[in-house]
Length: 294
Image 1 (cartoon, rainbow, N blue to C red):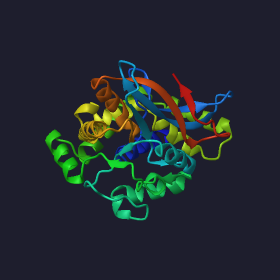
Image 2: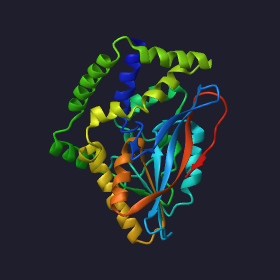
Image 3: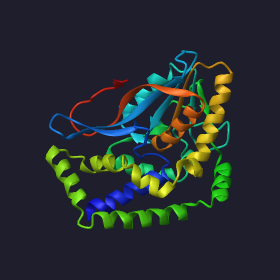
Image 4: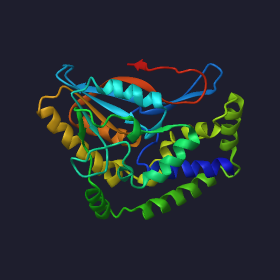
């Protein structure tokens, strides 16, 4: 069925792009689809979640800034404005330390180049590397190099081939749960009822907030190279950044990384202090704007 093929395609693209998936850790959400009063989908939102010392002091603050690597231009403009206020923004990019990110360098994209180009055109979105100001003085690389990632994957017996077969078996299990595709029909009915033209964009928004599909592929976050090993590097850089005197630090990583990153922040003695929801994709109606949550 069309819905199931799109669902599996969305999950595979999420894996390739090291990016999206709804994420929940101890009831912390990092991505969601919002709905209007008529129950029609309005926007795909990602969370900016703040953490501070558990003693309640304001010595420093760390924000997990959830990223979706293709999004509305307004989403990236919003992030650029927010990033100005940070002492340091730790960002993900599988590349050697010191790599300079430029929007017009296709070499930075690697496997992403053809995939993101087609998707941005198909869904009417823009690409993160073209919109975010990585040249800002407060941006700090906090990721593995390709060689380091390859080594971590080898150590764990991971590969894109392994992920492909995990996706295959996850798809089989999913089909067994819903062989008639009832869920797909419900989703399609919701989209058609909204009167939206970008139905495919809405379909992707629902599917990339499906945590179970990514867990089936990646396994336990903290043990994987794509999530755990890279997050470990991000926390190493965070500790150095805080030791150097920064008091407001953002960790700008893909949504799929956030539950494990939150666990690592909690292990450092930090507690969640607030959440702001940011529109990444407009699906219908007008912008909902950022929402403050306690």
